[in-house]
Image (cartoon, rainbow, N blue to C red; front, side):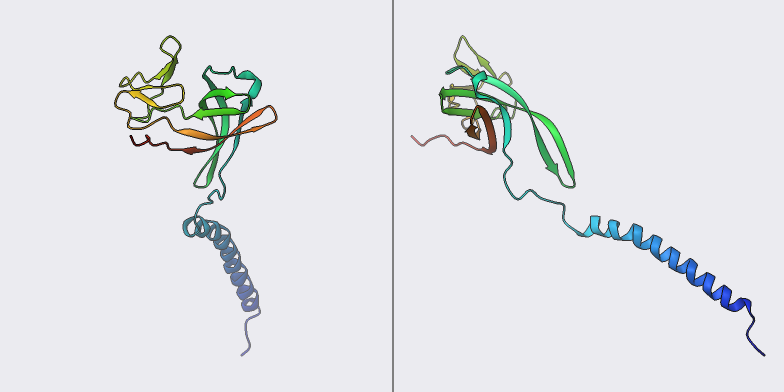
Length: 166
């Protein structure tokens, strides 16, 4: 007795079906395994963001600037609106403060009449240079690293400040 002629065709079709299902499993499994087993991308270097033009700043007068920056959160890259308080001390010297109070992170404001930054949440007060004048704030305002490139002001990583020892 010989083999049935349809058995070769049946074997071929079963092999093709199993191969097709194997390709589908690989197409779905490889990305899923990469997502679960590989770490998310991390930023190797500090990001510097162009915040605005130097000519917009008046010497000695704090101004709040709003700009866009990119943030990496695991696998997701997000463009978000951010702000900083800028103070031009000299034509080539600018300090930039993070917009949150160092007590509990509330947004503070500049009060022209008092010539100080005031946090409305718990009444912390800060000098023009970011030093604590009063209130529960434990340390001076955090500052961004600043670069001036031509007429552009670029902000870098945030530096947490500590109160100088007396």
